[in-house]
Length: 160
Image (tube, rainbow, N blue to C red; front, side, top):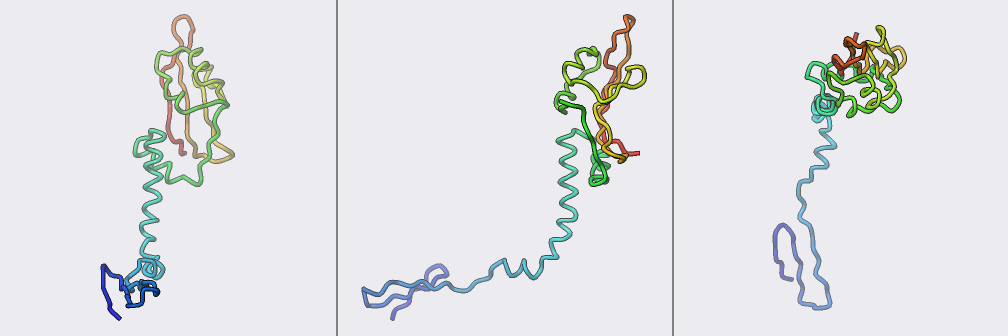
């Protein structure tokens, strides 16, 4: 019987044309047993990787600065936010200082609450009794004709 060795496989050839060629795999190292035995080596990666992913999510999706993103991750499982009906974050981002109250109303919709004699419109509130939530407020100032104009918007993570 003649043997030919090619790229880690043993080919067994015989002189009998009716007999098919057989391939025998040369045993090698597989990563699976190493992972099964040493799974604990990935624990630090999971403990650091998950918060890092959440941090990136809050920075890029919500547009938070680093300090607010860190607060969001810190209170991740303790926070709860409810938003006004038909509220969308991308529409809230289009509100600019100087816009009229009617424009804001048409763009975002009805706020949850209007506070301080209609100077603050709250589009988010905490869910239940939690003090940690994503705060969305439009602050107004009235001009000489008593028309509300946007003074500023508040978009951040609220933690007492």
